[in-house]
Every structure is written in C-alpha cells, then in structure tokens.
Image (cartoon, rainbow, N blue to C red; front, side):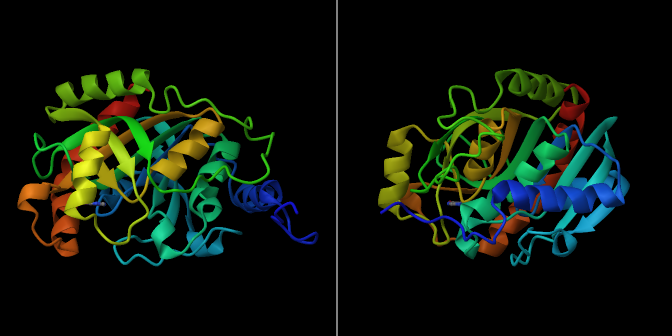
Length: 282
Ligand code: HPA
C-alpha cells in the first residue's frame, strides 16, 4: 500500500508555494537575490536592512507561526550591503512540532521569488574543543543526524531532482569570500563540520563523544533541513555558526539555555559585521 501524502482537495507543496508567492507579489514587486535566515539570538542584522516590505509570518499563507520566544517571526524584504535581500527573522525548528516540509517551506518560497543564495546562521555547541565560546565558524559540510529528510515523499520535479547531489552543499566560493570579508572586518573565523540533531534535549556525554568521532565540530538543532532543500533547488549556501557552549564530554556542565542565548547575542555583532561584509562580495 503506497503512503498517502495529501488529500485531493488540499493543494500540494507547489500549490502552497504559489499561493504564498501570489500574496507576496500582490504587495510588492521586490525580488530578493539572497535569503538570510537568522538563528537563535542572532536576529539583530534584520535592523540594518533598508526595508522595502515587511510581512509577519502570520499573514503569509502556509507559513507556520513561530513559537520560540527568542524569535520574532517576520519576513523582511529590503537592501543590505547593496544587495537585495530577504531576511527571515525567526526560523522554524523540527523540535517545535513542525514537519520538515513546514520548516523548509519559506526557503522554497523565497527561491521561487528569486533568491539564488542562502545565508544561514545558527547557535551551535562546540564539539571541537579548540573553539572558544562566541567563536564564529564557517560551516564547510554537515552530517544529517536528524533521522529524517525534508525531501522524503513525492519529488517535486519543478523544484529539483529526485536524488540531489550533496557533494558541496556549502559553497566553497562563498566560504572563501566570507573568509576574505572576515579578514577585512577583523572578525576571526574558523571552519568546521556541523551535525544536525532534532533536539529538544541536549546531548549526552556519550553522544558528544560519538559525534566528535564522526568528525563533527559543531552540533545544533537547525540548518540541515533548510540546506538540504536549498541544495535540492540548486541554491548556493553559506552557513555560519556561533559557538555558544563547549560540548566537552569529560567536563560537561548542565546546559543553561539563557547562557546560550546570551553568548549568541554577545557574538551577534561580530556575526552581523561579517555577514554584512561577506554578502557585499557575493
Ligand atoms: N547541542 C545541540 N544544540 C545546541 C547546542 C548543543 O550542545 N548548543 C547550542 N545549540
């Protein structure tokens, strides 16, 4: 018996994308080149955008509503560093109960609106003990340890191929441009591999040990689904993490989410500088 993915009367994912796009296009003819998704505690960059149009997520058809307190939930269209950008102030997480199709829906809509590049930031745990708290890391690759994939289900050929290639989901070109920008604005950056988990609980010491042995440098509860969907649609991606806590299995301290958000907020201005300078070069 094949699995059933939608009812006859419900629009499929293309229909939902079209409905959301029509709503946006009725309000503005703005076409972004770059989509920026701002992670937990890293939303300040949105304030630097010269706004053309702001939508609250609630008014956008088929956009889920955010529930995480540290996220606001606005889609901002405007100009940043001379580029036409769309900024997602607040993102959706799998652990909140959204499906991965919901988590990644905005990326699909913004790609159809014109964005060919995705810049995604997140707060992440530092598995690599060479990292310090507040350090900024350019993501070179990821490990999907969520046990799910946003592309499961019938493939939408209009968006991308059934078996998308993942040989360079994080663009080496954008990593090099970001590294150059980082030097110019004097923000030190490292590089590393991000492992995506579902959360919401933090990892055990044994899990941290395993992830380090897998070859991961960073761990977090986001990013991987959005990047998979972006790769499916052929977008160029830059991913940037802020290290908020040390995942040291031999000296693990109880996690403090307020502390994590505080660290992300403190590092946020460095990240804003870096992303602002990097996208000017894209
Ligand atoms: N694990 C998962 N997600 C996180 C962590 C962590 O240690 N720190 C910040 N986000």
